Length: 298
Image (tube, rainbow, N blue to C red; front, side, top):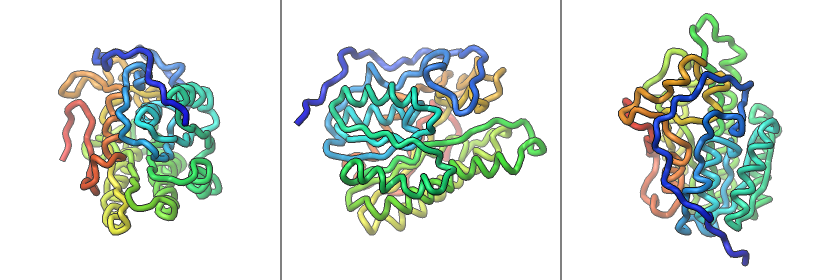
């Protein structure tokens, strides 16, 4: 059995308030080009064996919140399959190297969740690669800022719903066929589901749909011993923001309107997913964990 290594260096979570310079990346954006760099826990997250022997599929696992969750899961002992867009391969390779240092299996499953053939096979391919599946993290998302409804095209609305919620139905449906009792499905919703921004109308609508989908699926899956929950991040510094996820001129003050007065880092969200995936959350079903620095929430 391979001995799982721990990070050589540890440092506290970066809690400084960042004021990112105005910047723009073409969609989907890369972590490697983000200024300043995001903190995924590469040097700070230390596992405690809470997911030993677990096998997880994480969509959007190349960057941002998905990358932080992947690192946390690996350091907690889970083998991981990373799903991401082919254009994000360079980020995925970087994150995979961090996971491999933890001594776990890592599998790459690149593709586009808008491609029905890809998404219909994804869960079963992950289960085949990992030798089974215990955890599905539905994290991949599409977010494009548009000033007014008149400028919001049907094509964009369809694309946003396709990635954010339609794919979640398909992947969760497939996951119910392979995840056994004691498994978990964790969905990424958002503060936007509860406190929507006018310029993110389609994105916010999908996140509200995810919140309701999570509760409905949780009730269905509970009788099978599968726990379904969600995490609702607030303003987290990821490549989603400068790749048209926010107005460019708003980036320097991104997250400054929270009670903590700053944007969060991906590493600060990851522990919520670890908790929901672990046996510590054995009696948590249909819940949403809010990680938002202090914003309006139910």
